[in-house]
Image (cartoon, rainbow, N blue to C red):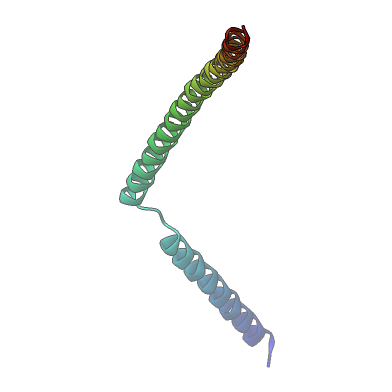
Length: 112
C-alpha cells in the first residue's frame, strides 16, 4: 500500500465517520424534536395543574375554616353541658334537702 492509497483510505474513513455522526445527530434531533402541538399540550397540562393546585388550596382553606367553626361549636357545647350538669347537680341537692326537710317536718308532726 503506497502513500496515495493510505490517504484515500483515511479520507474514506473520515468521510464515513462524519456521515455516521451526521446521521446519528439527525436521528436524535428527529426523535427528541418537540412539535408545537406537543408544546401546546404541555402548556394546557401545566395550566390544568395550576388550576387543580388552586382548587386544592381553596378546599384546604375551606376545610380548615369548617374545622375551626366546628371546634368552637364543640367547645361552646361542652361549656353549656358543664353548666347544665352543675345546674342539675344543684337542683338535685336542693330536691334532696327539700325531701329531707319535708320528711323531718312530717316526722315532727306525726310525733306531736
